[in-house]
Length: 527
Image (tube, rainbow, N blue to C red; front, top):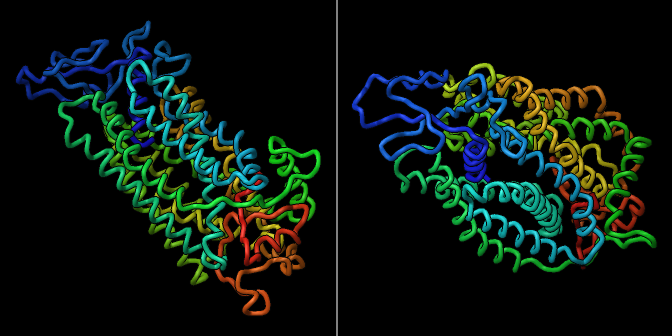
């Protein structure tokens, strides 16, 4: 995706009738000023064409469109469009389609993991589908970009989400002691970050090293090279990993009259009624989380389009690398705050959303045009740190509020809330950008607005101390892996029970499932 999105942005604009100015590098004139082209000015050295530039010319960053009233920037055009949409909105459009797809598939995928014996098959199948979508993207070109974009937004996005759900179901089974889960999650996050950085070095660095010339054609060629590398390296590694996993029995049985197609949606309703009647403070957490998580999940996509379309000429690669690097220190800072009790879990989550809000606001204030593009770099590390901080902080708070015997049910609802509004930020970004005439500076505000709304709901609707009192009489249902040795409930400081699933109808069955020493099972949820 990191190389695919800039490439389809180029192809969509060309297909929609947008073009770039060309500079004649062979005229020997050194007086040309690049900044002149940002306002649409064209001098003797720069001219426009409707195709690509010649070999002795360089395509300039800005994209133009010939409207009835004259030549304007592509993002401000009212006549250039591709399949009924603005070409400059293609990245957010893909994210919107992917979000809707994931929200619709989440209950069904969770049901397969929880209520069937096909977890391993689902894990292998979703990985095969994910690799296949990347393989198909190797054929990206002017004639194939649109169907490949639809495939990425639907099959690619859905397969990625479904594969994550299946994989997370195995994590608690890697150790009999739930206290080991945070360390496992930290390790997987580090491996993930290293893999992403490795892709940047190979998938994005290699094209820069071997491709010559200038212009957007390099974006397309670079994307193809990147997808080839992903398939060549990712397919064997994923095959090896899945071959080491084992089939698992169903965690729950379907009741008479229930089926996999509907049980996920039914479980959502059951959980919501339980939260509303018994655990309103936990419901307040979920309400706030749904909003701020939709913004957190959309940060990369939205900032990607912002950099490409608003800060024209700045490579998104140079923005993404420091952002990703700073995720790890952000997560370490969250764990340090929790360990030293510098903030409560609730305060830590709110502080992370404040850092997110501040960082994006500073980007909008100081980096809002090609001339001010480099002003984004001082704030990018803080976006990454906020991203790394918020994930452990929100899970620690959730663990404090989960009733005993309902860990799995609530973790399932947690996963559901993370997806249900994932389409909202990119869609709002598109709508606001269009309403503002293509200026994405203020459309970027959708991210801090959602973070702020989520934090406000958490502050007023979630009384953590009362929430702890609400679940006090259920804690005896919470069992841990070392009870057989200690003779009672073990103390687990700063532990996140991630994806340890249970049935809302039969908490006693979930306790047995969690503590079974013969066949320890866990899953993501029927959401």
